[in-house]
Image (cartoon, rainbow over all chains, first blue to last red; front, side, top):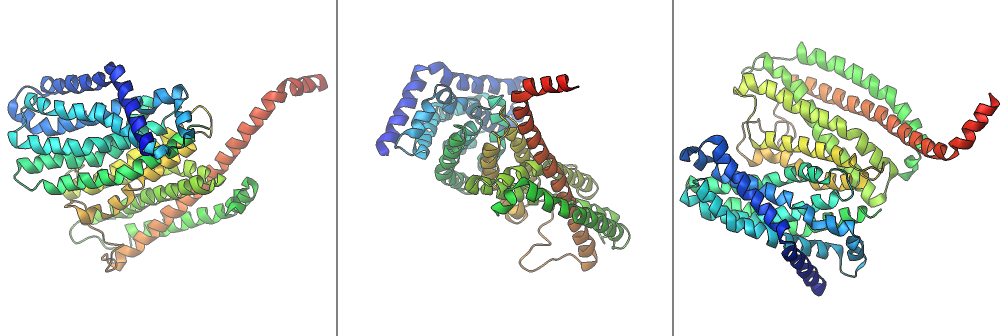
Length: 222
Length: 251
């Protein structure tokens, strides 16, 4: 089971590396969309500073969501997903490996880019650490919950738009705690409770999300 | 439980239930409206505006209860593959969506005179908004596939994933600092509402529940009829060539 997990992880990482443009597209979206906000609300530094944490978090959500079709769609289309389901490795383990690969190729680059966007949006200095730690805890959760959404829409019409409708309401708690963590830091209040709650959501998502996604994948085979 | 899976037997029971549900709805609604509009006191603080509560609270209760019904049906579908479960869930989802929207709308109309604002992003309102999105996602997913019954199982999984929202809605007013009123009916120490207001509230809750049952029976009948029609069309299109020729030849 461990070897199966590592094999799946290695496969997805290698595929992401070879199709590098897929990964870079999500990050390019993150940067370009973030640049739209100063153009939209005006360059006033005070206004941007108030928006910065929220904008970065919402765009992180959207970037992760836009890259979700990489998870299962191409494997579903060429039949590889059925072969994976037939293998002796449990589907939940394979989904966990795929989610980890997705996080490593989408969430971690977002973690690196977020402070850069923070500088662009004039985020106050106290906000950087809670934002990065929050994103570090939150983006794996986004990949896991996103795996559920990506698995549910296999074979559906307008799968991309449908994924957005399904997954964004489930992302809202992570968004709320991530942003309030930064706001708490800027107000001098304790940040730990917010980060602990996000860690709790991650702890719940780690076993449950692959289970739900595996069930969804199995229903897509009929 | 699987005895009722036979559509004909289930329809007999549903048709028997319908007059009671309709009658109950009409009677309870009449009594409830009389009590809430005329025979109950106005609030010492809110005046007569408190009477929106007699629509807002039943709508909210129905929104959450219907999601619970959908979650229960989804569990039944996934574990026991009960054929009625998917019909009940599909039939209930739009009703729940509308009642969630009504809850938010009446709450908004109540909030403007009382709180001074149409909307506030506190825990209770936000979690009800998330419930609205979950209903919309459920309906979208169950209708997103070209094959007719294909969307029921994914939608069932989605419903069960979203069921975590229900305790959040219930306890949001206790866990967070909210503008919304804290729990006053289902509490450890019992209800805190005066009995003169509790009576019309329970009458309206009963009326709304009978309304849901009435709608559920009507929609279930149409879902069963629709699936029979689909089967007939699929069988008929195979024999259509021979059958229509016979009819044309016969007259």
